[in-house]
Image 1 (cartoon, rainbow, N blue to C red):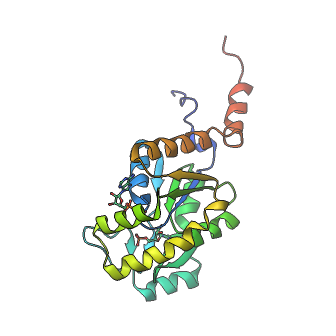
Image 2: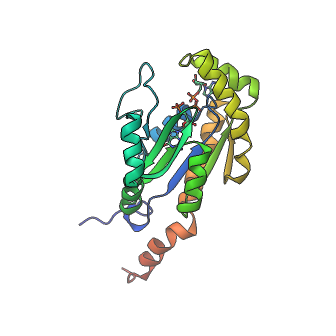
Image 3: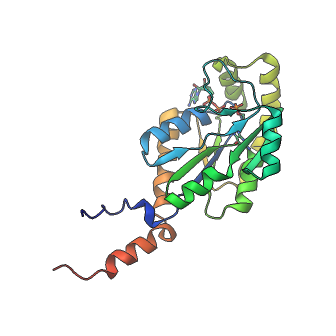
Length: 216
Ligand code: ADP
Ligand code: 5GP
């Protein structure tokens, strides 16, 4: 049987949990999509939400859209690794998704708010926490309005929450400023690559490799 190539031996380490947060409109969705396209081994978790579906969104692809009753039942069953109420709706990450990724060595990317990220920081050792900042508050507002997906009322609420969310950035591991999209993407890529090279993640595979008898 052909030997798997070094260093791509995902089953020799646990999957890495990458958590990305940012105020709404900073560009999380755009950047997450770009990195998932770049790293084939990286899977984006699909959250559950009670938020109404936006035009163009698909159930099971953008989110699992569920009723408030279904969400409450899932909370009661302990089905979420984290969940939070954000901008008046509930959002949560299925525990089964994270456990499955950890077990199978699949890296997973979560686009979640600061409350949910704080829960995982407590409960999920080894997680990597990345905060995306917009270049300015004015630009954030311009992007939210330019996206044209939310009512004036929803945008106003998101802008109000943004001030609160920006106070949370200090406890994250990495800060990426999304002014120029290309540069922000390169910075994010660098974080993903560097994190997968950590000794703690590579040591077992490396030791195993060099413990094998010299083939010469
Ligand atoms: P979030 O998921 O954080 O709410 P989005 O990814 O939906 O944000 O981005 C909000 C809007 O800003 C979208 O219309 C997106 O195309 C735009 N956008 C994202 N990044 C940039 C950037 N670097 N420069 C200009 N516009 C951007
Ligand atoms: P949107 O409604 O714009 O898709 O998302 C609103 C906010 O909810 C964003 O900050 C997004 O990161 C957050 N969010 C999405 N999914 C989850 C989740 O599973 N858990 C938590 N805590 N926040 C989430």
